[in-house]
Image 1 (cartoon, rainbow, N blue to C red):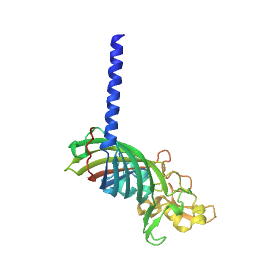
Image 2: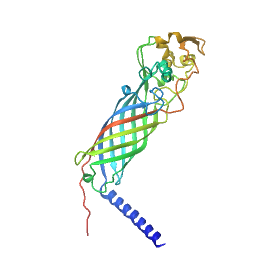
Image 3: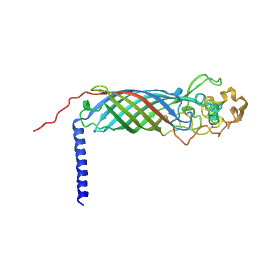
Amino acid sequence: MKSKLLITTLLFTSLLAAELRAQEFTKRYRYTALGVNAMATGYYGDVTPGPSILSTDPKLIRYNVGIYGQRKFYANWSARVSLSYGRLRGDDAESAKRFEAEDAGRWERNLSFRNDIKELSLVAIYDLKANYATFFKRPEFTPYIFGGVAVFHHNPKAYYEGGLIETGWYALQPLQTEGVKYSKVQFSIPFGFGARFRLNQNFDLGFEVGWRGTFTDYLDDVSTKYADKGDLNAAHGKEAWVLADRSIELPDLADKQITVIGSDGQSYPATSMSSAGQQRGDHTRNDWYVLTGFSLNYILDQSYKTPKFR
């Protein structure tokens, strides 16, 4: 009984001491930092080399740049608000191998896109090394984990030069290439890990890997099945059905080309894999993207006030 009472007392004392220490930090050692980052952006979805969210094609990695403000609230905890701009890219012709069984279908599909992402995020950061002192006594190396919420704007586009419509970039969302209307504004769950390396009293160099689990399957404008070309033509014009089916552009699929009759009674070119109702994407998994790169963090200098004794 005495041993249990002793353990309970020690535990309560430790928790009370930790709470008092945390309160002391919040009163005296809070600070704000500003930063910039330069990241590489990878995309995982229907137009990637494989089904795993870890599959990627280094040739298709693009850039991301951003600014952020960060506030230290507790010895381990901070909050960060970030604004970033980056680009995603996917291409069946570059990431799928024609003569491999698991890739042949995607190579024949021949879809491609780029998507510019403008993201605003709010995340909580937990430092694995606590610092109860002032910012200029922070550790030389601080690993951390983070998680939060983000809202982003996206606008997938495809480049066309096949001769049926004018050559150039086309925004895909207004064309509803699968007969689905989706929003350009979406939410995601950012999470990941990183580390900060102290350079001097005010500057830190950071490295971070952060995943974005989104709530959309249309970062690449691909999710479900091929739509009826007559419906697409009636709703959004020739550009819609041409950009919905890129397999008809491949000379190597000439022996698979067919003619289909749309819902409007007109004839349209297609291949044996791209008629209405055939699988175009995988709707069972939403799209992801990941940011990996470096940041430069500047801690705003502020006068440090020593406690007053009476």
